[in-house]
Length: 472
View 1 (cartoon, rainbow, N blue to C red):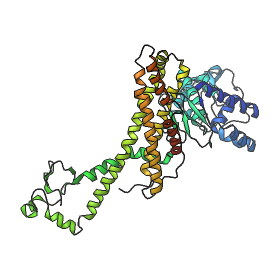
View 2 (cartoon, one colour):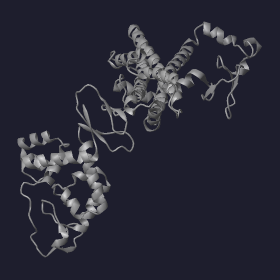
View 3 (cartoon, rainbow, N blue to C red):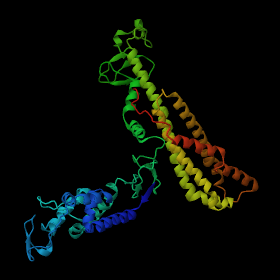
View 4 (spheres, rainbow, N blue to C red):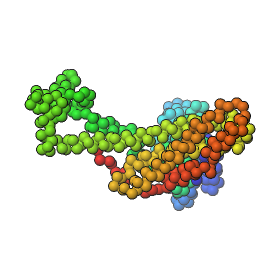
């Protein structure tokens, strides 16, 4: 449902679209490119608008119906910007006929190019004129560096202004993706090995929807969990209100300088009011009495809720991060297997590499399953506690899939690694052991077959996740 495009592919498609418009509308390729840029490189949109009202389109885009051809004075002309006189050979104009010297044109165009992609919609320098400046004028008067920048903007606009195409979000990747919208599956794998979601351009995250992923990423990067930790593990100084963490057993707390206020950790009262009559250094009768009367119930309830929320978030985040790190390690092991170890295994086992492809397939499956399981923990965090049956079913599938994945990962990571250092063909007993290891990685093995089924069930929509804010 998508096509990976190199820069050469993009250029070819761009020129094909320009040629289509130029041929059908009987206009120049420069004018066709101006039209396509204005309508976000949509050939059908250009056709619809042009045949509906050609005059209106020309007026909006800046294409004159009757361009001015040539200059009235063949010898010497005055530049409309610097007001110097120049031979007509050193003067240039677009379709409107407003002539300026090539030096002023180069400065005008260079400034626009340095300002960014807006140079693709450049108009005549005359304030009263809206004629479009095409690529032919850029190539005629601009410097070599400015031409290269303009051509780069021009090529990239075919992707950036096109609703059906996007650049791969991987740093340094120059590939683009042409996507068939409405196919249902938004996972895209670029040639650079980056997998991402077409809809939100984040890492591929099935079975979790884009909204849940956005909330999860924001939660991981926001300060909310820091505030939860402060609320759950500290109390504000009654005088200066700075949060204080209790790190010793005594209830006698002294705030840091310059405050130095001394107070009771339990009731937050001044320590001068405490002593043997209030329970000593490790208790506070005033606090216990007030708690029984309900004075501290709301505060304690907030602290307990914050603590439970923090513990719950930590539970899911740790498992999310662990699967992420395991996936990164698996990707490194996969690359090492492809570049180094597969050839060695082929020599040791006296088998062609084509018959050992199940090893690579096993590592690819591990990488994919780690990704799926990682995002199931984000899904599980936002799954409402009240939907008990759905949660029980989800956690059962999650546990079974994780158990199967651990078995497969162990087989690939530990059992298989024992064969890599060998440099001599194995004896018959060792060959039998190798067959058992291979069977553990091949498709018919029950644990791997079950894993594929379980992960497939996890990928299927289990139901919408309620992503309403969690109680703090």
